Length: 282
Length: 326
Image 1 (tube, chains in turn brown, red):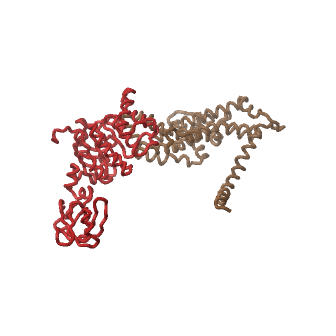
Image 2 (cartoon, helix red, strand yellow):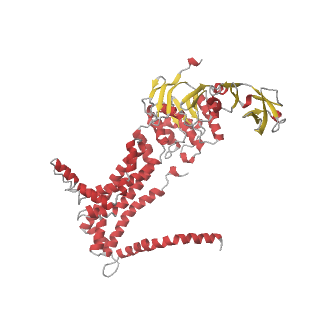
Image 3 (tube, chains in turn cyan, red):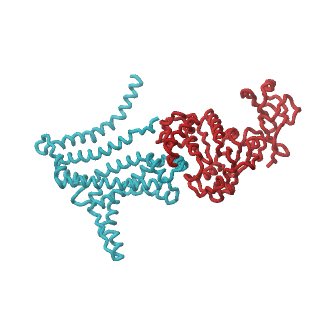
């Protein structure tokens, strides 16, 4: 056996277990779900009804739009706040900045369930904020439970640290001399931001945004604990179809819809990552 | 003649202390118009600190800095009449060479036509014509640094600051860049402050050298003054090659080229034995042992031809400085 062949066999041998696991647990279920989503529940014949249901049934359509609304607002606020935080951490050299830089990831280490319950005890209408208000004779009812604002607030708790971490890494790669050079030739702080910092970090911002988008489309824990009965996030709607109504074909269709929504963002991610700017080519 | 010239930059009792206690204290310096002044010293001696306080990238703790008689310490970098070339090639990687060069001019609202003409002229000056559409990543280190210098010069700075601009380049290109910088400087008559740890570079470029050590000025003078009359042991050891020969009444500092070597003992100031003979090209580098000291001498090839290792020689000490023993 030639040396090259041996090397190849060894390489395939190492890849095959992982390959089989992926085929069995990812590829097969995806293919079977896609097939199932086009089948009639009783006859198994080809149909588009499973998809039509989610776009024509008013309650389901509302769920879809509600999910997109929550996700887009989450992405927008999380990215803006995370970018500001990352800029602060990158360009301020005070003790406070250092402390924030060390602590801002802590929310990521709190288990999701604990974090959601903690948030609930604060914002619900009989929660901490309400009780503090009562001390001063005010009956504050935030009304954030079972409402989009509660879910978005919780999403920000999870996603701002994550997005800030990605953007901070990108900003860290911009050398000081690039910024000093801009200041030196006469650019003020704002101009330095728009001409240097933004174009050199926009890629990381977009990538962070796609990650925040994808993780929130299918989120479950937060809307399950904090969301209302209608409209629902798609993750809960899928749970209902599968676990309560045992409607497997519709579940499959909804899964594919959620996958397609995510794949838009995956497309943006791959495009941003692969596209070399002119200046990145050697 | 010195007093007729106009003072461009004046540093008055300037102190810059970092939080950890490092920094420079009580710095006083006058720089005349049209001069190249070099801060020379080992890394960490504070030379870059002074340059960055002039450029506005560091605040001074106390004291004042004036350019053309006007204080600049309160101004942010973008309001100062200085331009800086950094050690790292700090061209903006996402902009073409043209955009890099035009950026500062656009901020000054220079008309597009003038910008185009200026850039063309400047690229010719730094021998980089035709590179407008390239990106910095497509240029070599030396080319990038030329563009960085061009970018600074385009803004017609009152004072050009260069922070070890050639230290990342290889030896041959470094030498070429030095010559070009010197030519550009004398053509344009601008005032330049140059920071380097390379004494050869400082000697080659400067009208005036400030030798620094541990946050203080050791000596200020022309390259010839510094080379011929070093005032401290540090200056003597830092600039050029220098032998230190310990005697009872002090340490003699003598350069290898100022020692005359003769075959046989007892004919000169000192006796020694030959350790190594190395041919350097048109001259020979000879090391000899005198007591505990190893002395280096540069000698002609015709003398070296008569010598071999362990031969006794006598040394005649020519031009030298004596420092008291510490």
